[in-house]
Length: 153
Ligand SMILES: Nc1ncnc2c1ncn2[C@@H]1O[C@H](COP(=O)(O)OP(=O)(O)OP(=O)(O)O)[C@@H](O)[C@H]1O
Ligand SMILES: [Mg+2]
Image 1 (cartoon, rainbow, N blue to C red):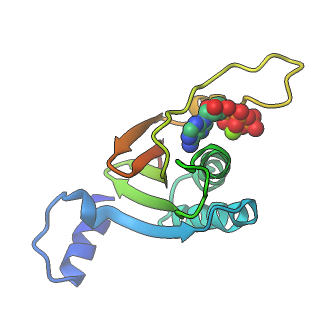
Image 2: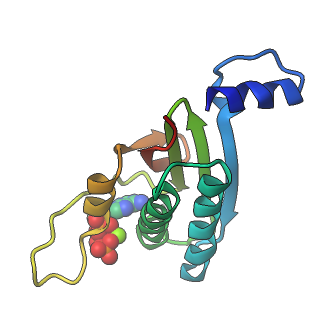
Image 3: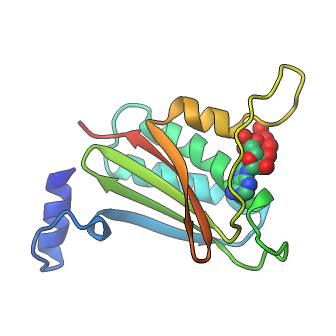
């Protein structure tokens, strides 16, 4: 991955640095509507595949992104008006692929372990179980919920 960042820096004429901005691999904005989850998950999978993420990382990234984008649409509109779009970024830093899903709500995710008979409540548990790391980061406009996968050795 470091080689890729160096090459990107060379193409843009920048001096090489591990500035995270140089490792942004893609960014997408979607309206707050459930029908846009499909294009968001394809976007994440395609970037992981384009950058030769190892093994089944593109499919896992697609699945986990789908959970986070679905949550952002369901719970992530701060004032309920849902006019502020959702931003999805994919970045690479050393061996880690990171997907951030930004929404405009400062309420933080609450992971729960759904019982056998419960129909929902598994999304974040899946993200935790399949990711290298995950979490959320508050910002002045809301937050991002993110996960990382080991994508390059
Ligand atoms: N982006 C978010 N903003 C605010 N709250 C969130 C966000 N994502 C998740 N949550 C909260 O965390 C809870 C757990 O999320 P999780 O995805 O695990 O389950 P779920 O969405 O309720 O059900 P499922 O994903 O199985 O359909 C949600 O019910 C919600 O209260
Ligand atoms: Mg969910």
